[in-house]
Length: 281
Ligand code: NAD
Image (cartoon, rainbow, N blue to C red; front, side, top):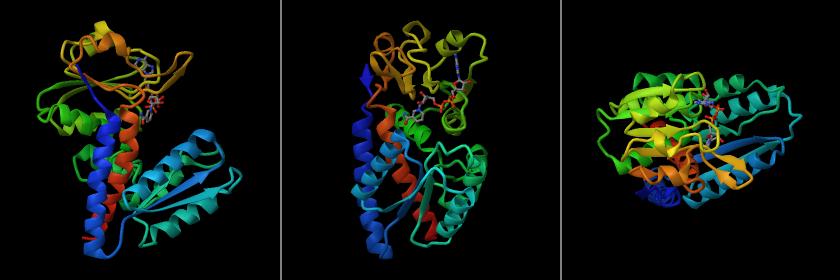
């Protein structure tokens, strides 16, 4: 079984990006810039943002974090986003979710210029992805996609089952696999027989949030299994896939932690570089 090492894949991607940023600096005399807006003091968000800033600096991006207290007015945030939309030194804007209840998430997402939407959540990017056009792609599914392609470069005709239909993970993952000519089944909480669906799959991507939902006897021999789930349990962090059982049948499997997670941040940096390159044309 191939244990897909997300840390190593992320380090390789960061190294590639570092070289690319250096080349862009020589060519344009400027570097891509990532601005993150962080509202409130929720510990997980603070950690995510700190990691994003550290990784951005590591590859040579210009990075900035703008912090607001969780009492900030919605309009202050929207005005700041508009200012960043017009700032040529800013290639990518990310507003760290979740937001305080009094701030309308959709309004925030739609205020970000789609060409600077490094999270790929703007309806324009969602539409472009589903139409098969160039777009920013949400970072977690993009990371999953890159890891799957490393294992199996030709996905044409493969049967893929995506478990979970969130806008963040399941839906964009489905679009990426469709673009690769997979036959994709998207499953969710109302799916009648999830085990039977999974057993058909050459590729399974599980993004649910239920510890060890996907069992060993749900997986076809030699399937590629990507585990997006991060669940805190008494036994520490576990994914949505029963790792020990599934590792006995799968051809390749991502661990939790150390699989999809590290690739997510590396893909945010990749999206920032792509936004910069598109803005130079
Ligand atoms: P979500 O709660 O938005 O969506 C969960 C999906 O799972 C829903 O579409 C729901 O229909 C489906 N679902 C629920 N119960 C089910 C069941 N019994 N059978 C089949 N489907 C079922 O979750 P999300 O934001 O997509 O996150 C999913 C998981 O991925 C979470 O554990 C989250 O922490 C993790 N996550 C990891 C990363 C990363 O970087 N590794 C990033 C984002 C989210």
